[in-house]
Image (cartoon, chains in turn green, brown):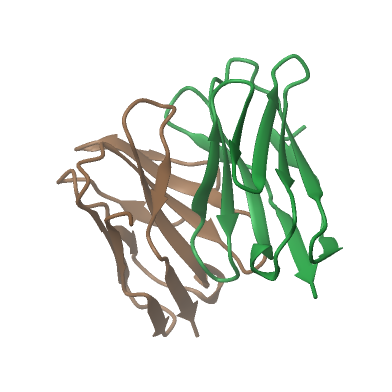
Length: 109
Length: 113
């Protein structure tokens, strides 16, 4: 089993839709979690961090369920510009940071 | 904007050549990383450093080597490039502690003919 697993996608949604991605992790000692966004052929950029039960930033909500060891990302009112790959990232508590394989989102007009 | 820079952005080179991909950051971060990513695929950690004169290999075996003589500089070297090395190489640094955010450079896209 991979240390970080994400919904494989791709997700194809119309503009205005609400879409949710899930990410499960295996290291129960992990304390912080991140969602990164990566556009095609670009570097990953931080979207949201999650340290407690959840975080909300505009149309984006990240939730953490420690008991079940998963993090979710909810995007409301999807825009064309939200089309990207979303990476779930879990620091291991050492110096490594584990990236999920990513979930690709396509938002269509 | 993150202050982490990679050069060259694009490199096309012949088999057998020695190459060095440069990575510099001006944020004073101790931890730096090199990831390799093929188009549409996931990132793989190939090297990391937690400070000057400390380097470690990552999860993905790589024929490249790294050095960390100065905090701000973390170059990656391939002694003899091969077509199998064609990929994008992303450098990153991390804020303090081990729960910090990763900041990425724009990447170096290497093509070996």
